[in-house]
Image (cartoon, rainbow over all chains, first blue to last red):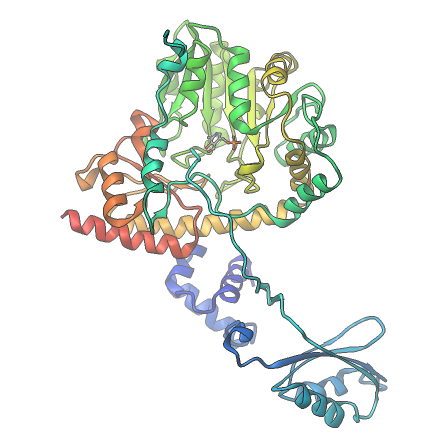
Length: 163
Length: 386
Ligand SMILES: Cc1ncc(COP(=O)(O)O)c(C=O)c1O
């Protein structure tokens, strides 16, 4: 891992479809080197996959998102890891983090409807051993996701008045 | 009725760029590589500081020199960043952009009849500002074959007994040239030996891509005979805030301050407060922008050379300055036809003087997509000429 690798990762994270030749010119290395650096990082699992950031709300096929806070009793020898692993395996779970504060695990859940999420939490998460308390927050609106701001904003236009 | 226009106002020519931009404004779907300012909006932390200043009621005049906290941060910044020493209370003035700093610097030192050397390609404001003081601007050619650097051999040829000052701009608009420490040493000797004053416009100091900028005033004995001009417009994408600064030894600074207090009174307070925030927390955003400019430069300059417009690799600022000589068109015709036929706006090099001839200035401070599209348009335009 060097500075060039980091720069390549940043560029890919910003646009996974970037042309490798452009990427090589931008980072001041030969194209074959850019290709091999990417290959290596894919192999090592640093690059996990290439995906798109989608504003689902605009499509009309809006999944319902909920943030689920869980209080969990940690296990001797494993702490939170084993229960986190079990929760992470549900396809409804989009993100899972261990956090400080009143709750321990923060889970991002997505479903087709509020009912589906309610059922998922009631039937699969809440009854798990070691889960002491849950708090479910339905997401009402997404303003920013993965660094992308979803506001429709008017951007000031640069007028040609400079030298 | 009498003709009320003064002789000096009459002899300064209207800006060649402005005429061209009027044409741009009248057209649709133009990709503009003509604008010499960042495409970024000012980083949000800096904007917040400006908004907060207004909310708190900071809407008044400031001291003529500028708010003290900004001058103190600036003095510290110049020292830690460039080893450049200026006292915050007696050796700096916060101005309404480098534009104003340039004006008051020239007015503070130039008498009618003085000759003022200016690096050519010439930033368009220098000769008119010199003329307004009754001085005479003398271009000093900076050749493409020397990557548009100023060479001491060329400088010495232009020095006469009437020469009072040299105005120098590196990193350069429009060529993107930079001067390294070794390049500056020879210049410093000539300036010192001939008892000249140096006015160094370093507004692009933060936008360098191979090695850190070296302020002229840190070379040899230049400090005592240098006016350093710089500002926030380019480094922090703050062109509209109008904040720059002039740094000079006490006596010169005092003279410039007299002019500043009468003609400007002070720079806008909310801008000054935003600039202070820029120094405090803007570094990361600045570095991010510089990194992006560098990648765009790589893409664009490679593209220009590929499509047959030879271009040296500019090591600073955000301008590429390719030659259009091989197309057989003059730079003005090239720029005009390119705009009309292919809807890409660039600035004809001859507006920057003799050494700008046969070149076009392309500001690559535009999105990578627009750069790629402009290259496609320029390429098909050149194909059409054959
Ligand atoms: C070389 C040079 N000096 C000064 C300026 C003016 O900058 P400011 O916005 O600080 O007045 C510019 C802006 O284009 C420039 O290119």
